[in-house]
Amino acid sequence: MSDEETSSANERTARGILFQERGLLSEFQFIVLTPNTTDSIVPPITLTVGTPPFTLAELPPLHIDDVTDRVWLSATVTFAAAAADTTVEYRIYRDLPITGPLIFNALDFQATTAAFSTTSFSHVDFPVITEPGQQEVHYFLVAVVLGGTANFSGPLTFTGAEIERNRICDT
Image 1 (cartoon, one colour):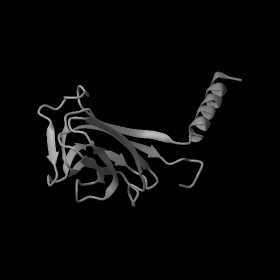
Image 2 (cartoon, helix red, strand yellow):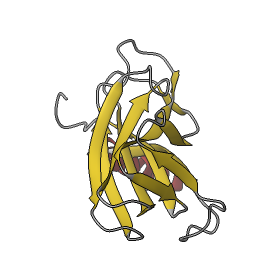
Image 3 (cartoon, one colour):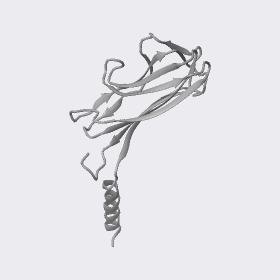
Image 4 (cartoon, rainbow, N blue to C red):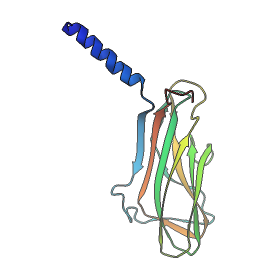
């Protein structure tokens, strides 16, 4: 076999492996405090009952191009309860904070004053877009205090990753 034939055979093999992938992380964005430790935010962000929903983090835009793409979102947030029985609702909005589509929410509760509460959560947004073609999609992590008082001083991490559809199935 000539060198030319060998190269072509190797290229075909490499292409075959690529076509057999089951999924593909194609874009990753994140917001993280530096350093990402307790007391990174000084003074802390204080939210109480009646405080309007507060945007803790906004991801840089993800560039979604296919209606079958998914976005894997994750967050880790810590707050210190400044009042007993503090409840925080975390929300993730797509496109716009507060007025955009609410795609996820979770509650966190701390019964003891001055105690720290760290919550981590994940969510998959699908479908993200309804028409093919590259579109910028924004995600916002929002906190709402439903009871008590919460001081947010870190750590805080918010990530988003575009994942291509699985090529061996229709969804």
